[in-house]
Amino acid sequence: MASSISLAVAIAAIGAGALLEMRQDAFARAQEASSNLSLILERDIARNLEIFELSMHAVIDGVKDPEILRLPPAIRQLVLFDRSTNATDLGSMLATDEKGNLVLDSRSTPARPVNVADRDYFKVHRDSTTAGLFVSQPFQPRLTETAQSIGLSRRLSHADGSFAGIVVGTLRLNYFRRLFEGTKLGPGGTVTLLRDDGIVLMRRPYDAATIGRSIAASSSFPPLMQAQQGSFVGIAALDGTERLYDFRHVTGFPLVLVVGLSTDDIYAEWRKRAWLIGGLILALDIVIILLSALISQQFRRRLAMEEHLRLMVNTDGLTGIGSRRALDEAADIEWRRAWRNQQPLSLLMIDVDHFKNFNDRYGHAGGDDALAAVARCIADNIRRPGDYAARYGGEEFAVLLPNTGMDGAMAVAGKIRTAVQGLGLPNAGSTHQVLTISIGVACAEGRSRFANLRLLFGASDEALYEAKESGRNRVAAARERQKNQAHGAALER
Image (cartoon, rainbow, N blue to C red; front, side, top):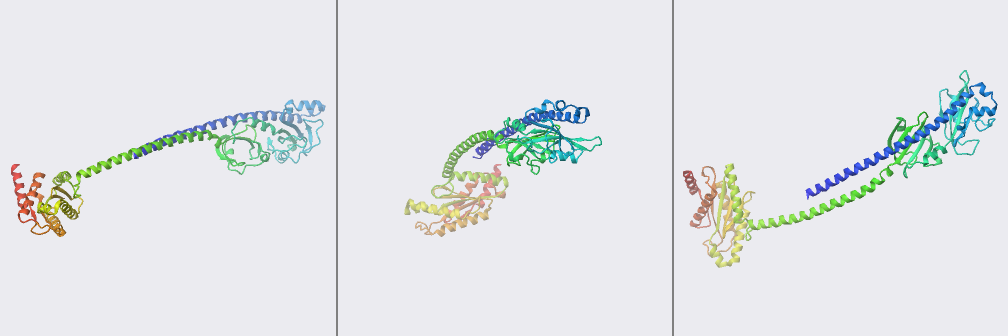
C-alpha cells in the first residue's frame, strides 16, 4: 500500500511539475507579447510627437526672425506652419505674448482673440526658465468643440532672457485612443499613457472619468520610475485588477507607455489544461490506490489465512498451548542461543498421573477437560516472554525455560505441580484421589552442558520416569544422570 501511495505521489509530482512549467511558459509568452506591443506603440507615439515638435521648433525659429514676422500674413502662415499642422488629430499651433494673448495661430489669420494665461502649459514656462518641452494635462479646447486635447509647449524668451510667451501645439487625445483600440490584449488587458508625474492621458479600455486622474499614489506607479523600461506584476490603481505590466518611457518626451495583461487572461488557457490534466492524474492516482487497496486486502487475507494455518499447526487444538512441531522449533532455537551465549537452558517433562484410568472412568470428554485444565496451570505459571509450553503427546507436556538454572526450573516445576493438584479434579484411580502430575527436570549449564538437544530431552524424560517410579505427584531432577551423560559425552570426544 505504501509503495502505491508513493507511486501516486510521484505521478502527482511529475504532473505538478509539468503544469508548473506550462504556467511559466504561458507567463513568458505573455511577457514577450506585451514587450513587443509596448515597443511598437512607443515608437509610433515617439515618431509622431517628434514630427509635431519639429513643427514647433520651426515656429520658434520664425518668431525670432524679424524678417519673417514682417512678411504678409498669408505668406507668413505658409512659412511658419507647414502642412503637418493640418494632419488628423493635430489641433492648433499657437504663439503667445508674455501675457498669454495669441499672436500667431495656425488656424486663423489674424490670430483668434484668445488668452491662455490660465493654462498649465503657459504657467509652467512663465514661472520657470528650465521647463523645456512641457506636456500639459488634458483639457477641453475653447475654440472648438472637439474632444479633449493636450498641449506640447516651449518657452519664448526676449534677448535679455526674460519671458516673451510660448509656442504651443495641441494634440487631440483621439489619436492615442484610436492607436490603442487597434491592439488585442484580451478581455482584461489595458494600455495606458501617463505623464511622468502619474497623470493619465489615455487608457484602453476608454473611460472619460480616468482621463486626467493621477495614479502617483498607487503601488503600481513607483516601479515605472525606476527604469527606462521593464516589466512587473502589480495591482491596477484604477480597477484593482492584477496584471503583468510592461512599460517604456517615450523617447524624448516626459511620457510613460504601459501595457497591462490581466493574469486571469494569461492563465485562462493554462487553467483549462490544468483542470483536465489534474483530473486525469487524480483519476489515475485513485485507480492506483484502489487497486493497491484491493491487492493489499487480498494479501492481508492471505497472510491471515497463513497465520491461521500456522497457528493451527503450531498450536495444540485441545489445550491451546504449543504443538509438538512448534516445541521442536522453539527448542532448537533456544538450544543454539543458550550454547552460543553460554546461558543455562532447562526443560520440564510433565506427565498426568494415572491418566489412562482417569480416561476410562470419566470418559474421553472428561479426559480432554482434564488435559485442558493441566495446560492452563502450566501456562499460568510460566510468565517470562521466552518460556514456552507445548503438548508433547497424549497426556505428556514439555516446558522450555531459557536462561534458567536448575534451582529456578525446580521452583517453576513445583508451582505447576501444586497448581494442578490444587484443581481438585477427582481421580478415583489415583492414590491421591485427585488429578496429579509428575515432572522431570533437566538443565544444561556450566560443566554439565549436554552435547546435544536430544540428550537434554533424554535426561528430562529419565527424570520424569524416576518421579513416577518414586510414587508420582512429584518433581525429580536429573542432576546425577545429567553429569554422567555430560562425562560420557566428554569421553566420546
